[in-house]
Length: 300
Image (tube, rainbow, N blue to C red; front, side):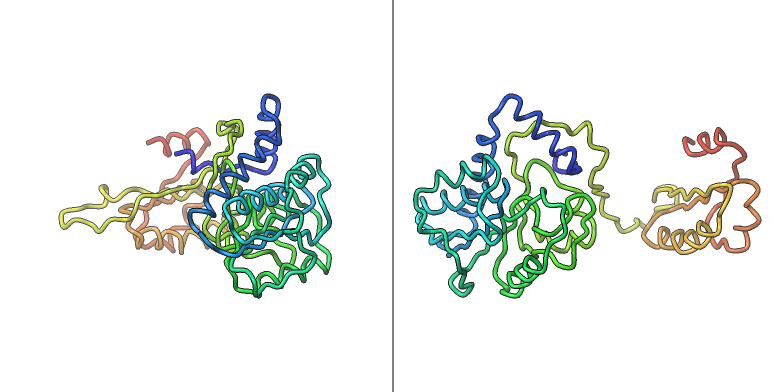
């Protein structure tokens, strides 16, 4: 399942570089903007939209989205709160917008139903200044529908961390694959529903070591079920510093069994068995002596 793959920021940048070796970067930007437009046009017809564009390529996406929306007779305006475009592609995107009158210096939020966040996407790593933080808060306080392009501005792509505040999106239209920060807290809270758009980047899924886990739903036991039909869970402790393992196992093992597992086995070094024994309720303890023993136990 391709949509379970998660990319780091470095990996998505690598995918872009590989793609741009054969495909013009601006062509990819136009494809990204077109797919964002298609989603907005289908799900938010006849809405009044303000597009906030940053100085980088995320802002280039935004101004092209505005261009496509304008062509379909949407009431749309563009605002550059942090200065005009600085990258080659974002400047080119703005040059294609002939209707310069849709660029506004001041924004009356009451006039719009939808806010598009095309400020920073995945590319911003610096700390935001007071002006930026105030602007983000102002957007969040409007309670309007917010659509972020690729990543909500202010959320770190890799860690999901935020610098005091970030734009809280209802939808995030992300490109190519999920990003780590979209699934880690607090970033996950700011993404809303995440929609993946395939913009034609190089597939580097094999280089990603991170995937979403989609466990099967826990079923109600049948009347004739026994523990070996319900699945086995292993909890493994090392030879040293087992205090934390003991504390976590006591709660984890019971949670596992209550969740529906048939058997919970606690695998510990033979020197630590007596430490765990007094606290065992219904779990099984298995001792190992060497790493070879441990591997054999896990495989069995």
